[in-house]
Image 1 (cartoon, rainbow over the protein chains, first blue to last red):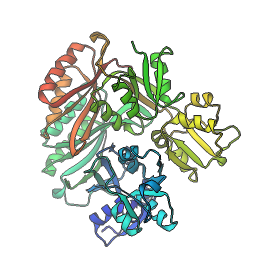
Image 2 (cartoon, rainbow over the protein chains, first blue to last red):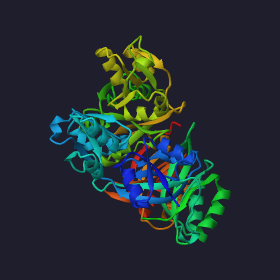
Image 3 (spheres, chains in turn red, orange):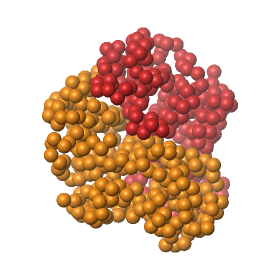
Amino acid sequence: MIKTVAIQGVKGSFHHIVSQQYFGDQIIVKDCLTFDEAVHSLITGKTDAVVMALENSIAGSIIPNYALIDHHNLHIVGEHYLDVQHHLMALPNQSIDDIFEVYSHPMALLQCKEFFRKHSRIKLIEDKDTAEVAQRIQNKSLKGVAAIASKLASEIFELNIISESIQTIKHNETRFVIVKRENHEIPEEEINKASIKFELEHKRGSLATLLNVMSDCKLNLTKIQSLPKIETPWKYAFFVDVTFNDYEDYKKAKSIIEIMSEAFKILGEYKNTK
Amino acid sequence: MIKTVAIQGVKGSFHHIVSQQYFGDQIIVKDCLTFDEAVHSLITGKTDAVVMALENSIAGSIIPNYALIDHHNLHIVGEHYLDVQHHLMALPNQSIDDIFEVYSHPMALLQCKEFFRKHSRIKLIEDKDTAEVAQRIQNKSLKGVAAIASKLASEIFELNIISESIQTIKHNETRFVIVKRENHEIPEEEINKASIKFELEHKRGSLATLLNVMSDCKLNLTKIQSLPKIETPWKYAFFVDVTFNDYEDYKKAKSIIEIMSEAFKILGEYKNTK
């Protein structure tokens, strides 16, 4: 039973919203200012799970978060999709012309790049969290400063939304995952998605052969990405997501891939929610 | 014959270094503050080529640059690898304890994240270019402010390097590409690498079948990435790089892939420099 969940952000952050939608209101949420801090709280047993953004429509995969899961041998036990709408907000009675600085999370700044091209005099400053900036603007009554954050954050911290949905891609879905220390806890028959990682010899056709195995075992590929190996630039590992109807099919594929590839690793086995 | 090359950055930037290494000293370099501006100068005929970072060891692919090449139907005509070493620099006689703000390009900030974890009181601020900050510190004699930039930038703008090679990954290779309006200009027999894009029906084994064709045609896969289609979240396109010994093999594969996939597109045919 999950009791305490670590999130990157404070109340009103997108991770907070996901933790509420996924776990309901009965959990204790531990605010962390970075993903590293959230993962640290999980590893040291201070929390039971971490909610973590993993993929979005503009930046693709959030590679540093993949690296955190992989490096600490953590497990993805669930996924959740959220349509992330970024709003520009400030103290009441401030208009866009009053704003000279916007603080937000780097990913939010990246997703709203187009909007700020029309307001190039506004300085964009990286910050730890979207909602924490909203909180700071309220606490310190900061004029001339705006946050990019969720509608919930504007409500909690009583800020005025200057401009709605300023992200470049209007339907801006982000994939979050639930990460724990141990592997899956749901019954095998409910598992129909897995995230795996493997490395291959740089030999012609080696990836094709492996994908053939997956296809023969009735696995559907929903994501594939070759990635440079840290400290061994341009040697690649593969991160792959697969869905399936029958856990037995997946088990069969798994045992073959394990033999055919190097450094095979299961990042998570969970329920597909897409 | 290339005469004018657009780069993201000013003199002393990593793109400037790549443009010199690739084209030599006889070209005119046009400084642009964004990749968009560089691409715009190419499209409108003000420049003959653009130098563009495309991949690095921490963030993986720089997806927004892939999108620029794809969206404007530009062509990759060459590639160049640079070992990017980031140095922290400020006015002479400033030590790390004097610094309270660091301005740099978002990618440089990301690559040096670990270093600044030990100096959490320093505010990190996104800026347009690494070297342009170095220039500004010199021009305005800014105290308390540091730049993250190349050794060349510290020499040009007479700044003192406070801390050398502060990026997390010490051997930090970045892949740059040379982009033009028209397709390749070198003879077919010299071409041994290609970047292609295609979409596939979400049908089991469709990617495996396509990779089999590539393997049968003696193509080596050096990169594969599934990517969400802009404005159609979670429908994926594939970006693939292949190398080959014989252009005829590639031509054969190309004609088959064109039939078997949707929206097939060649992003570039060029010489492998790895």
